Length: 260
Image 1 (cartoon, one colour):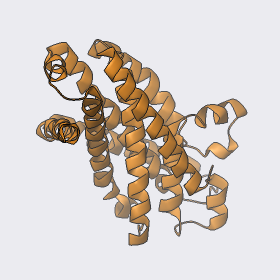
Image 2: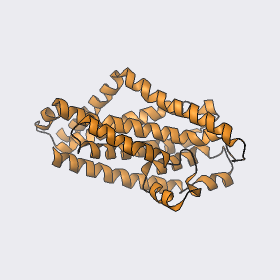
Image 3: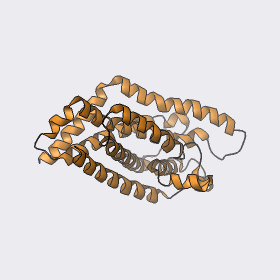
Image 4: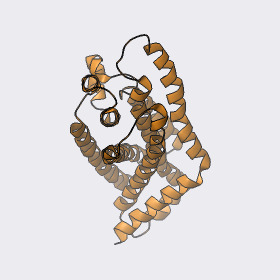
């Protein structure tokens, strides 16, 4: 009973901190919109000179959502480093509750925040001409949750090894941009060099983008075009995200318990 109560309390704390920080909410929404407006419109005007078979902004939209999920999930796990620096983590660690419950609660909190961010961005779909049917919403919700869970677990694993927010921030900069640009957000991964494809196959973000793109563009573009830009099948993407998220959360719980 204490285990699940601890998870709930930690999850609730992370959510309250997010909802109270209006600047954080605004900036986390503004960044993906800027990418969509600047890169989407700019590259679309360039690619309009060739026949790519689909609207580039619609092609890029799943990648923008995935980028937002990754950024929010990573940034949410930085609270672990803050709590350690300001002493709050020591206070909850001396409580008679399992440390694994604390780690899981933080992961659930980061996952919820990242998923909420994605839901808000999904409201832009009609603006760019994407028609999302009700039948696709469960699949999209599952993909978003699994992706957020994967990145949150990875973020908590890294945060458990960091002692300062500066170190965590620098490491995030090293990880975020390669993960984003090798996710297939800007270009299909079906026509890239072997080394790039190999790295992308290790990137959980590429599986989230691939699955979301297939679900969102299904019915919007022809099956021939969709097959040309799809890297894996949707069930294969979901399977990878499920396994990856489970492994990351398990490693994060183990690292968190041992480190602290």
